[in-house]
Amino acid sequence: MSQGQFAVVTGASTGIGLELARCCARAGFDLLIAADEPAIETAAEELRGHGGKVDAVDADLSTTEGVDRLYAATKGRRVDALLANAGVGLGHAFLDQDFNRVRRVIDTNITGTVYLIHRVGNDMRRSNAGCILITGSIAGFMPGSFQAVYNGSKAFLDSFSFALREELRGTGVTVTCLMPGATETEFFRRADMMVPASAPPRRTMRLGSRRPASRR
Ligand SMILES: NC(=O)c1ccc[n+]([C@@H]2O[C@H](COP(=O)([O-])OP(=O)(O)OC[C@H]3O[C@@H](n4cnc5c(N)ncnc54)[C@H](OP(=O)(O)O)[C@@H]3O)[C@@H](O)[C@H]2O)c1
View 1: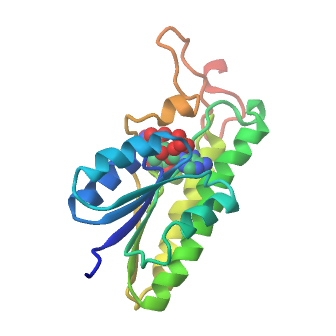
View 2 (view 1 turned 90 degrees about the vertical axis):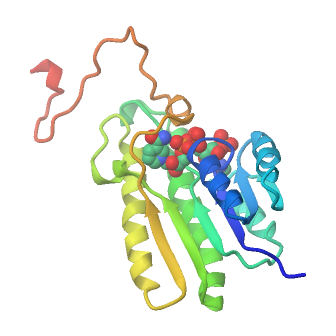
């Protein structure tokens, strides 16, 4: 019996990734979904309701071991669509951030993402077929005071996507960069970016200024 189309979606436990996985499931794809929490099983349960085969992997994609585990879970099946979406933000001034969390943003959003794309992308190029969707962000187009590392990581992904697309021009592999604007998901709470309604207005740095705007 011939198998249907197969998509791998990272960061599919909640938010944008879960919605992308729903789109794939509705379109008839079998799915391998991943996140770094057991909630990925709940998402898998829901997605199975669309009738396709859905496997879930609970793996930390900020590590090469986690990415390798996800890749191994494809069991050699050809990946028709890779949706590299897992990502994490981090609020507050850079020098006040815990460096372990800073590193996790970089390792998840950049290193883990490009490592996964390198592995799956090579398979796609060999078979001259496949679609890669990378969740960048409009945040990648602007310096993000008080989320400087996050915006920097998305600037990397936006830029990387356009370059990879160009490198694969003329092959059967496509690269698309999804650039959401602000979207209501778990993202802001997880990133410690939620500002309580009672909080005073946040100081913002104006470009070209050496002092926060509210002090001038
Ligand atoms: N929400 C926005 O306004 C917005 C705007 C532009 C771009 N984006 C991007 O959209 C993507 C999805 O974000 P979202 O808004 O849907 O937020 P979300 O609801 O917090 O979803 C993030 C997903 O990524 C997974 N993830 C994070 N770190 C991971 C890790 N180290 N290993 C494995 N999975 C990991 C999360 O699972 P775990 O909780 O298990 O880690 C979750 O499934 C991100 O790349 C984000 O940068 C969001």
